[in-house]
Length: 495
Figure 1 (cartoon, rainbow, N blue to C red):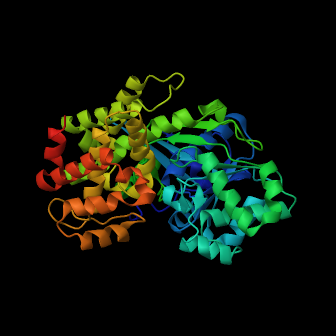
Figure 2 (cartoon, rainbow, N blue to C red; figure 1 turned 120 degrees about the horizontal axis):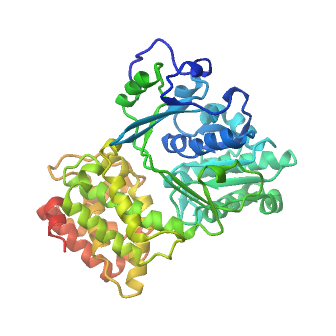
Figure 3 (spheres, rainbow, N blue to C red; figure 1 turned 135 degrees about the horizontal axis):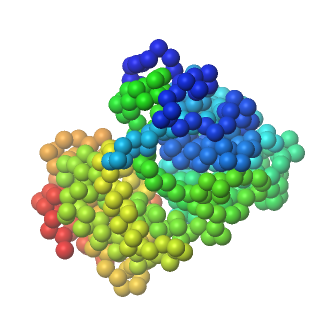
């Protein structure tokens, strides 16, 4: 996505001082900022979240905390920022109006397929204290329920055979850690920022297993010198649109092809378990806690779980965005019911009232300025719903609880991955299991129950729960209702 240039100049360091007073600028000189972090997966979310916190921390307390961002699959961000000296703007959107801020913390962007040696070298450098990640659930090539790599995944197979030219996240980390060890490696923190329960512990298990296969000699050093704190991140960051690029040109007076849009709300909670120094994030709103798990579960099951419900059922009902979906009273009622189901599985979180948190989520979902598309949220559902819904259903059933809302949400996902909407138009599924869903649908054409039964037997998604009649029966009942009556009528009829 790149809109036509509107101005004759692009955002760069020389033009920072010429930006309008209404645009917030870095409170330091980005050109003198040394690199102290490597971030794998420099997509829109990182640029609207961790990079913003780091920008603020450097402005308050200084330090060499510039970010080397790494694009693992696409050269888009590299190409956007390389000619802008790493600068880009964040457009914070709300009904009250927009706020614009230029971020200076990204000092280098590498495209891994072309610059793998540089990526490995950056991870190995003593000046690098933190490697952080936002690569989405599917980026880890992992079986999360077993906390082990997918050993037969093509990327994992490649990296086991060609360790010096990795293509997977685990392969990149292993190669970087090996090189760091070879250079008498200083302690390092690897900070997972993806939506996974106990994400630090999960990533630690994955990295240890992978490194043990390739470089067993570095395992004692790895155990003693590399930390894997867990974290919870929260900010709604819709995909950038051509209109954002055009509006950035107007707001900044120069072109910015790296602009990202986000809601005003932002939160970051990190386990206080670093192996080396860290930026002064605590001075700019980041919460450091002994145990992140209660925060992770709350966010995954209330925010992300609700998001996914609206993505699938809202899309099927004909809504384009999350804001349009939640504006429908029937969907708002269903989302509130889902949150009530999920709340019963949560531990109390210090300083959080679940009812107030839920009301805040409804308000955030309803921000029409976000323009967060249902289809974007719906991506990679097979990797997401185990943490967001299936774990909740399993815990509730174990205590004799009802799972009606989660059953309906799951039925919505199954109806969605059938691959056609209610007008019998093809849905372009973006999911690692898309080919499996297509094969199941081809085997069971126009047979909703057989399709649902086959999907429920996918163990990587449902574990043993898909074979539990207490869960499978209501799911299949709702699948039949969705095929017969449609999503809108099914949601409206839910009690």
